[in-house]
Length: 390
Image (cartoon, rainbow, N blue to C red; front, side, top):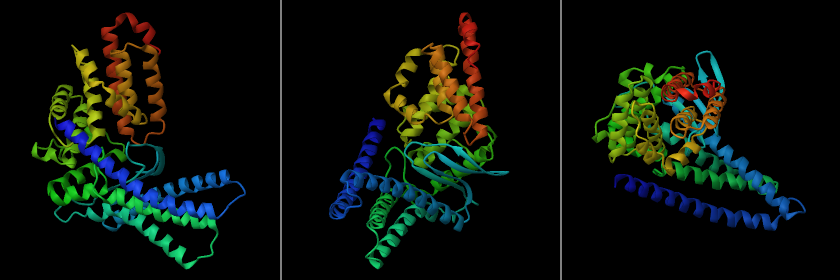
């Protein structure tokens, strides 16, 4: 019942997003369509459309960069410490010995600027840091509008570029600042949550501090307990508290307190808590892994949990270091497909070569080894075929 309600809320937010996009797109399309129809960049309509498409792609990526720069600048202004800056899957991350380029992505986000707050108290700044991205998109749109009005005789290509910057800047601002939770909460939703519930500010602080530890290549198990705690039931009803519960389950996994992790995950999955879709599917995957490595695994439970939503999410999370570990356990202990298990290990090694968080790599490597040992214990006749997996 609760999960269906959350799906309806997510569908409603997606509908709002589509309506906003449709309205902005219709207005922009009408304006830009007239411009393209009345002015020829080349002597070919097809080539003109191709150039227009290229300009659109460039502007989209520029708006992503501008958005994340807004978070960074407002974060620095309010005392946050820079940790990483991501556009697409290209990530610039700050390490103890300097800056490093890495590869990372997260479903539902085109970019991300992660920063660490200086303190946790009643006056902890959170509004400007979250507002910064959308405000910078609006600022870029305003500057473009000013240039269009000041310089009326500019080249048509520059006119198209500035016009798209206006429309897409407004679009980015609206979809980030208007509170929406379409499987992942946007900036406006985070602000609304923290204004309504002061305790959620603590969880916001804890999540960013956790990222600081991961950036320093620490493991989740190394993070002080006061930064990861299991919230009370009432606190699990807001998205920040629910996210912290998922992180707590991750800490139990890294500490290899598997029975406790199973208990907590079962409780979260069976209850009506405000867990975003990505996190819900991630803990479902961890629950399957925990079942497969247990002494008497229930294959019926694995079959039930390994549904189309999880399979879809695992594809979306294909560049996350935990995904090939999950796939390895499933192929080895559930499907008994040695070749696909080998492929999962190959993907794991490929991802870890560019992955930004060494602590996570170390943790996931141990979990891989546990799955391998489980297979060897239960399938002694297949050890010879399995020894060359890694």
